[in-house]
Image 1 (cartoon, rainbow, N blue to C red):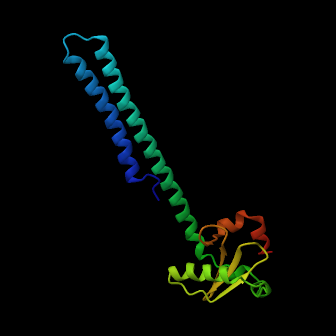
Image 2: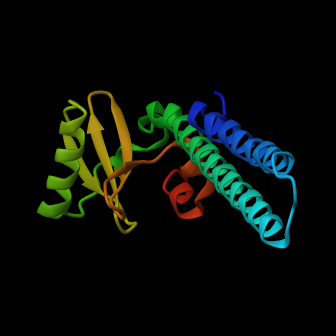
Image 3: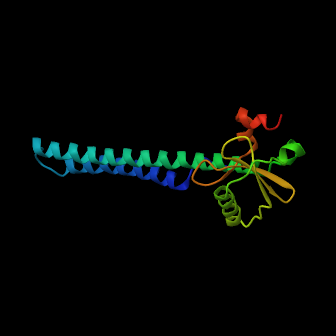
Length: 169
């Protein structure tokens, strides 16, 4: 996936254009005056500085948009691993955890899966706080409820977290 966003490119191009336009207009303004006085030089310098500052702001916005695109691409890369089949890694004993799931957690997970038109058949708690196993068909997802909305953990996220890796041992 590309890390450059079209909006970021347009903002960068606009930044170059504004700075270039500032220089062109400043020099053009100097050519059209017979006698250049101190006040006129102050006007030209302030005119040029305003264009440079606006151009730099546009460069900054361009970088922000491009960095946000990188984050979106990284999340999209993690979402590829969502289909990771957790069931193969769990023993039947771990899948039949007797801890109860609160009604609030169940409701949050059911609404999350319902928004994606996915039927969640069974929700089970784990020993870890805010981590749940959600069975859907033949697949089992590991879902985290700690944030604003539930997150299906990817294989990369599971491999990075030692306490999640312990679930597989």
